[in-house]
Amino acid sequence: MFNGLSLLQSVLGQNSRFQEVSDPTSQKRLQLNHARIIFDLFMMDPSRNSTESVLVGVLGHYTASSRRSDSLLREILERIDSERSLNILSSAETWNAFRANWSRSHLEALASSMESPFALIDSESMHYNIIHFQVAGDIAIDNGKVSAENVERVRLDDRLLDPLFWLPIIAYSLEKATHASELTLLIENSAIGYALVCLSSTELTIRKMAGFILATWENSCQVLKPFQPYV
Image (tube, rainbow, N blue to C red):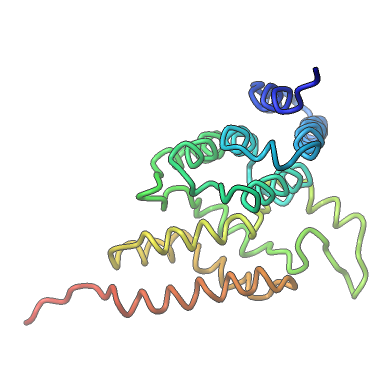
């Protein structure tokens, strides 16, 4: 009897070697094909496939970029969250699954944990995305018209992050901040700056998330004021 869940878990458990492919275009094509297989297998029975083990497997392949392959995987993440209220913040296991994959290109992320998540936010990546933020998501618009060339460029740019994933991570980090120095860190790693540019997004959900982060950060700055001794 065909067991879609077992097949899905088998595909998720495979160790991908995409990083060993020398041609970047071929590498991205392989990643997209792999993501499509995972997506199609998951969508055969989303309710049954929405398990923590599947979530861990998907997070192990997800890099939270704006590329089409990651967009497909994020759709699975959203469906699992809606079906079972499971996400990257559900447990140390789910957190570590993404951290392990993300740390392949951002080694400092290995120092992050659910109790101290700040190292997961890469300052160089945040800075790059502030400069190159896509107001219209993965669709670049020139003079009111969608440019197919720009769409392809955006989808192939590994450094463009998905705000629908990263804004909740920033919000969670802000929630975990217990000292003024950690609030300062969120400025230094450009997380707050990234939230600011997200206010320009054409997507209402992204603007609301960014606004919540900035309002929370401002309030936290009032509460977690640095200690100033009496002179």
